[in-house]
Length: 245
Length: 268
Ligand SMILES: Nc1ncnc2c1ncn2[C@@H]1O[C@H](COP(=O)(O)OP(=O)(O)O)[C@@H](O)[C@H]1O
Ligand SMILES: [Mg+2]
Image 1: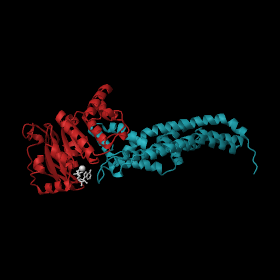
Image 2: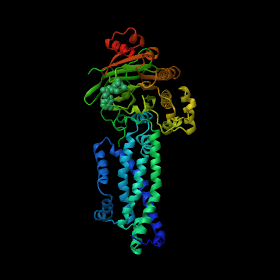
Image 3: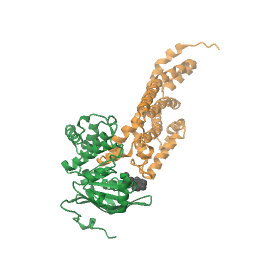
Image 4: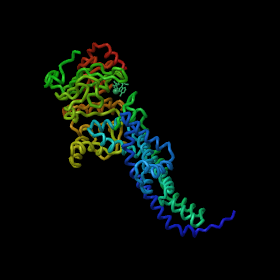
């Protein structure tokens, strides 16, 4: 095998690839920001006392967990216009699809975080007359976020990588721009290697941080409360959800 | 169903009051079942303002369920509850009066009571700031006073994880005090503590009664505290109040065989 590398192709493509990276990061940040907020009500609904709400939330989550992201993306971009009559720009479709998807996964992370908050802590809040919203805002969510931080970070790293899928609906993200440059220069090897390096350079530090947090949490972890003393399971046999819509 | 006088319909309620104290809590015919099992079987329960009532009984007899019903955490299936002369639960639901008195009822639990992600000051001031509209400085003043009452003033900026079990419980009491309760419900708050530490925590309750006139309903297995500090001892047996009497009658001249057996078992 003797292949003549032509890294000039990368040098030429690099400015436009950085532009593509800008789009990738923009999409990543928007998606993460919106998902992290929307996942709270979804997680609450997922634990609701009222069955219909719980089932609806669970149905939503399962749909996004059990279908390929690419299908979700195509569905929003190509299929939904047939229903709504409105064709959304690629970037908007991509943001909607990715957010809908990440929200589902994020909600599951929140839910296990909520369940790790001992029911007494929430009841102490109730006794002090904090409203349902205040209990969530000040007692449950902050602790759930901390507890689930490694999971949340790895979901976000996956999302960052998965944004590459949006190149298939002509959003000019890093992957799309790389692909265009590779085709134009016939230098796929160099260009896609460069693209991989760029993704890696961003994701790897985040991954290191995640592992470090995880390790620190394991070392300092207080004995985790028994499952049956959690917010969801109630304090005694039989379930008495403390968090519900 | 002949229930003692306490019906929502009867307007100004005739509250059972013994001696000079006006009843702070009067519960009639409380019933509660879980999964078809009757846990409270028509419980009548009275407490005078400023009294310490110690509730004893085997585990599973319904003590926590009663406290939780009084606290508004669990609604009974039936019965009535009056607080400070106002009917707060009747006809299977909380009345509007409940909202006017609920701040007067505080509760402390056995464990996991403090919010671990906030320091002591934040634990104490969150609710007063949100619910009573206290300014940060006012809330801090009140927190300092409450912590002084439980002997924890020097720990105002500590985090719950830095405190011992007994210290946490004292802070939890202080946090309840922030809302100026007339009644403190304490469910086995010392069960996880060593006896000397438990005694310190219980001593706080006695001081609160003596200095602030705060009534305390305490579920405990600490018979020493019950006989020393309680005004009333209530013995729960199979979802019913089998005995409600003075500590002397409960422990020295006891004529209830179940209570006798229970006390002997706890004392070994
Ligand atoms: N939320 C609940 N769901 C199901 N069962 C419960 C619930 N709360 C209490 N119980 C049951 O009621 C009984 C009495 O409980 P409890 O009032 O906690 O007793 P105690 O405090 O005297 O030990 C127990 O058998 C318990 O399992
Ligand atoms: Mg109990």
